[in-house]
Image (cartoon, rainbow over all chains, first blue to last red):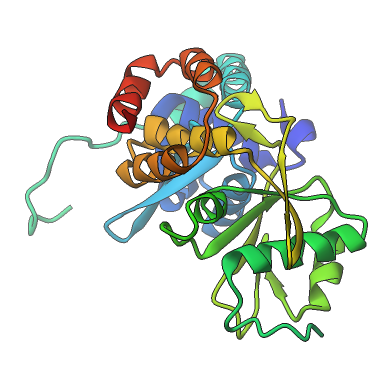
Length: 111
Length: 176
């Protein structure tokens, strides 16, 4: 939908994913979108350089989230949310709504 | 290649050198971020990042800074002998959700420099404190506010617009 605007299909997907999940790392996005890791990492870096996203290390994983200081954040978030709401339900479920384990899991247990 | 010894250059002099070099190549840039705090606090806070904002293409900046011996990596430029990193932050020039249109112009022996006003430098640091709960940024805002006249009325208006009046009271309490 917005691919023509961003000239990059991953940008649209990442923005929609973040509008739902608030934060994400490259591996998680790559798995969700069933796509290669490298282009996702490059797109995340580009979005961070542009100021829209900010990242932190959580352990050894770089986690990306919206940059609350970005001056057009609200407008971009609104655009991403609206674009997401126009997706067919099967696409929403397949690429954006996989359930992530959020409860703790004791270290040493198999994943 | 520059004749200036970049291994011993002060932050303020380097900022002027970069600004003047860009200007002589037709590139307008504004210094923002922690380097402004270093300058306004006379190095009581020492930044090693010089963040500039410009609307010009990075390729043009690369050509201009190449003569000083700086090499580009993404949006950043470094020099083997220089301890500082020059970074070009993506425009617009904004603090929080407000565009910045008026800047300070310093004139030094090393040249001139366009940068955030002391009030905007305080806002810039407070934005990090407000949004990231960064206590270091609060300290930096206090350093600038204690050594320069700040437009408190404008600061309160801005904090209210950003939705952080309560957090501003903490800053004002420590400033008093």
